[in-house]
Length: 282
Length: 235
Image (cartoon, one colour):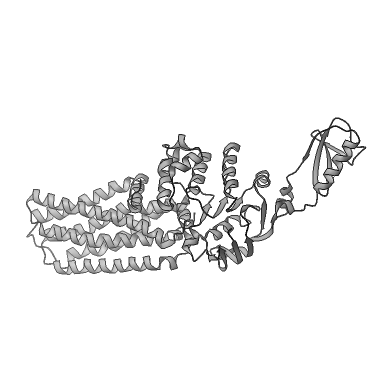
C-alpha cells in the first residue's frame, strides 16, 4: 500500500503560480483519472509530483518521503510526458537500451510488451507520430515503479494500441497508484475508478467516479412502439426516445415501467458521457 | 550498448551534426602546420617581441588548437539543446537526476572530445615535426599549453552554454554561435601574446588564463543546481 500526499502545494514556472494551494491524499492503488481543460494545471501537477518542478511552497510526499528532496523516492516514480523524449537519431532498440542503461530494465522485454518488435531496427525519426508515442510509452515500462504519472498516454494512438496500454495500466493499478490524464471522456470513464478534476490550478473535485452525482442524465431508449404516452419522452433523437432523469436509479424504474406495459425495449443507453458535464463546468 | 554516458553523448552529437567535425579538423590542421612550419622554416628570424617568428607561430598554434576544441565540442552543446527541446532532459529529471547530474554527462562528453583531439594534435605535431626535421621541443610545449587551455576553455564554455541556454529566446539553433563567440573571445589573449611577449611570459599568461577559466568552470558546475532551477531544463 502506497500513499501520495500533496500538502498546500503551490507550483508553477518562472515564479508564475499555476497550482494554487493544492491538497490531495491518495491511499488506494487504482487508476485516478485527472481531468481538466487545457491550461488547468494537469501537466504542472504531474511535473510537481514527479519532482521535476520544485514547489514554491508546500510539499509532495510519497510513502512518507519528500519527493523534491529525496532522489530515492523520485526513482520510484514513472512519468510519461507530452514530449516523446526519444532520441530521434537512434533506432527503436538503441533508444530503449539508452534508457535501460540509465534506469534499468530490458529493451527486449518492453519491445515484446508493446508489440514493437517489427520496429526494432527502425530509426525513431522514420516512425509515425503514433509509433513514436508507443516507443515513448515503452520506455516508461522498462522498470516497474510504485507510482505512475501518465500524461495523455494514448494521444495519437489508434484504438487498438490505446487499449493495449490501458490494459497494462489496469493490471499495474492493482497494487500501484496510476494518475492518468486524458481529454477523452469515454476513455476516462472506461479506465478510471477515481476522478481528480482540476480547475484553474486547484483540485475542484476528487472522488470515486461512482460517487459523482450529476445534475441530469440523458437516457436514450430504442423501442418498437411509441412510448411517449407511457413515460415523459417528448423528443426523438437519432431513433432514440430521449428522457431526462436525475439519477441512474430513476432510469431503472422507467425501464421496469415500460416492460410492465408490454413495450419491447431493444436498446437503452446513456446519451452523454457522465464526465461531460463535469468537464464543461470545470 | 552498455557504454559510458559520455561516449554515448559524443556519438550522438556527431550523428546530429558532422559539419563541426569538419571545421574543427580544419582549425587543428592549421594549428599543426603553424606550429611546425614556423618552427622549421622561420626559426631564428627575429620578431618584434624579441623572440623569433618561428616560436611565435608555434605559440599561435595554442590559440588555433583551442578554437578547434571549442568548435568540436559545439556538437555536444547542440545535443544538449536538442535533448532539452524534445524532453529527454525532462525525462532524466523524472528519473531522479538533478541539474548537476545532467550537466556532468554533457561536460564529460566535451572533455572526452577535447582529450581525443589533444592526443591527435600531439601525435600529429610529432609526426609533422619529424618529417620536417625541425626541433620538436617548441611544438610539443605548444601542444601541452594548448591541452591545458583547451580543456579549461571547453569545460567553461560547455558549462556556461548549458547553464545559460535557457536565457536565449530562439531555443533551437542560436546556441552554437554564442558558444563559439564566447570561446573565441576567451582565446584572444592567446592570439596576441605570442607577438608581444617573450616566450616565458606567453607560457605564464596562457597557463594563468587556463587556471582562471578552469576555476570559473568548476564554480559554474558546483553552483549550477542553485543558479538554474530544474524548470530551465524543460522543453
